[in-house]
Length: 250
Image (cartoon, rainbow, N blue to C red; front, side, top):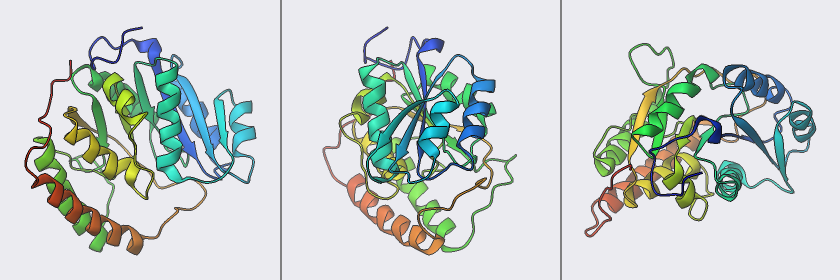
């Protein structure tokens, strides 16, 4: 398999679907089955993030490779584990899929194929054919954050908090050693890191549903406050001189 030099030369059999999961026994089997049905060629890794239910057991029985963390470290920490696994096993691409059933595996194709021209492809919920809605303070904060990251990226990132995304070889190599573990670091923070390191980020329209089971780790007010703080931090970063220029995908 090729080395970590760029996003081109993607091999279909070198794709890892990584599913971070915290107490998702009610949905994990169905998510694995739908991914397998859509893309039988991919490998599936479930990172059980300190789950106290049967998530790890059911995921393994469903045919996924399982890494069971001894305690909960959050999505960022779980995905750092997934990127380390992907780098160690020399995967060409990694696709992050939520364990709660919100992400539609039908969109896996375009997230994977998009890596031919980018290092990261973010699935956006905000497009003309989408019925997904976010309102109130959280939406306002997301709009400001989108503008700040788009400016850094020199290209549109309309849905910076989307966890449905793919990463090519350069992104895998970067995130295996530099991936934020704080709340929403796996989405917002990782994109800020990627832009500063010159990785090419594109986006693709995707469908997202409400979660099948379980509960979110934070409420809407907490998310809005965090997004506002993250926006200010990213704006400050984008104004710094001497930032690493954006590079080519290949």
